[in-house]
Length: 283
Ligand code: ATP
Image (cartoon, rainbow, N blue to C red; front, top):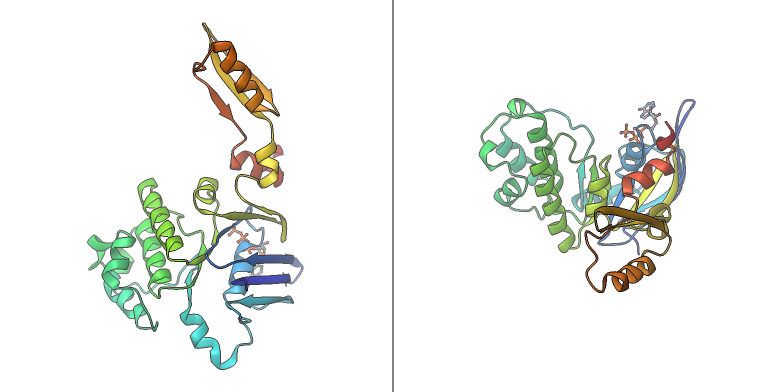
């Protein structure tokens, strides 16, 4: 059974058709990234799956339950889910550690508070008031609150917005660790390198519809798209665009009788492919 199963999800706000028929199947243990431009429908989709927004149509199963009709099971269901919203409500007058401790009491099997504080790199700020945190530190606290309950399923809506590069790398390490524990993760992000580093599969959503779901390496025909092979030949750097980079490299290795000077084989980046898919490359 998939942890997330969505069929024909639709949601409009008045005349705005934000989500127009989304299907998703995400098995246990997968890290799945939802990519799409501003206003594509990512947050609407994710918040419906979290049970925070209503839908107009579609079937949803999250850990075997419909987030909108689970009656008495709601509490047990929430206990198994971690959520990092795009913008969290402010509880400015509490300290960081008070807040993390407080949230840990909502869960039946929480992670250790100290462990979570260090996982998100907030130990030094543990006594600081929330309203005095920087934007990136505040976001780390949001992540801490999302993982404190030791969730089976974690929703992350643009989790690293505002992080400095070091904090982003540390966060990626944390997600890798959670993957190791079998946590299923649904992530939205505008950072294509983040999707590439973390996601087993990505879906590109535009205008409320999923255009394609694939591994980052295969999205938009990336794995079979033309590669550019380049190398040094004497004083010149040469390059060739090809559908068969292996054949070109094999010929070159015969030509050079071994190591090919300054060899590179470059395929389009995930960002190149993504921009082409959403039409952004033409804008
Ligand atoms: P972003 O990358 O900017 O976060 P998104 O992909 O998460 O965008 P959504 O927030 O789901 O996009 O918005 C999808 C569409 O629905 C947008 O056109 C947005 O203006 C509209 N929308 C979202 N929430 C509401 C709301 N509460 N009321 C009215 N319209 C809304």
